[in-house]
Image 1: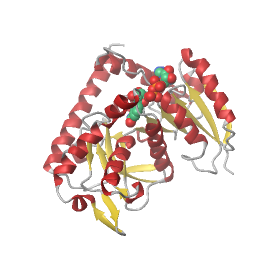
Image 2: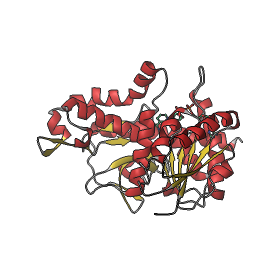
Image 3: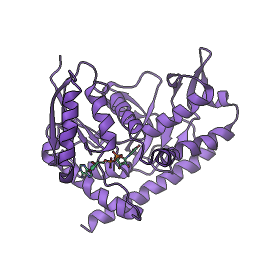
Image 4: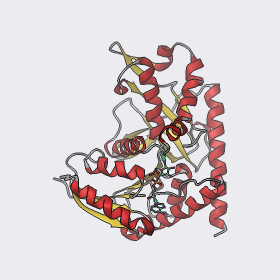
Length: 333
Ligand code: NAI
């Protein structure tokens, strides 16, 4: 069997990590043959909780898990890692302005970028889950100049999975019968869930979702709104934010990055924009990508409707503003 690889999860004492660590250690991301050394990074006040998570991981009796390294030191947490799940972030608190949240997180991701730059493997794959995920990924990459910026991504896979689940349930088909849904732009309420290139398997035949639905009023109306507001709906029902589904999405994202996408299929991830589809350059923008040999490539030449154009412009504008705010926080420090 292959040598163990080191994988770090930050925010390891938090809710998403509680599901995510188990899924990773089960072999659901890097494969059932790949043994692992899991690094658990959190902040000093959570060190005690981390110890409990370490006990539970041990008690899960997982054959692939060779060692667990709990730490509150980023330089130890990121040392020699091949994959990094950056889940930990400052949560939004009552009365906190968006700007306050952004400035707290920008600082966290600066520190983590610098630590990755110093001690991680140069081919490390970094997935940012902690919000604002796209801009955090941008900041993190900027402070890790020795790691190619293609290796930094932000998670919009939960939104993609939510979109696919909506379509599958509308047609009463298994989720595996739905593919090629796209999330464009920011992981925020301005994201654009786009089903116009999506496919669905009904009666043994792959069809365009648009044809199966019949008209655009659902896909441009309730579908988009339901996906955009799903996170809020879960919070209002559960009194806590999505965690199990966020962990599953993080696994899906990293799994596909590691193992590639099937021919003709694409997935969405937030990556450095080259200006494709009229998006602003040099922000982390969610695009449809195909993946081969651990390299993603933006899918080209998809048609964009007028409706889609306005949505892409809106989410792109928000990302440019976030970037500006993030840079001004960093400049003033
Ligand atoms: P949580 O509050 O349960 O856990 C977060 C953990 O991160 C805490 O243990 C905290 O101590 C830790 N943390 C804070 N600062 C840290 C630092 N500098 N280094 C290491 N650890 C640090 O939160 P939860 O529910 O696990 O969510 C984590 C993040 O994921 C939040 O920012 C949330 O908004 C985001 N999220 C993103 C989604 C996406 O689709 N991109 C979906 C769901 C959540």
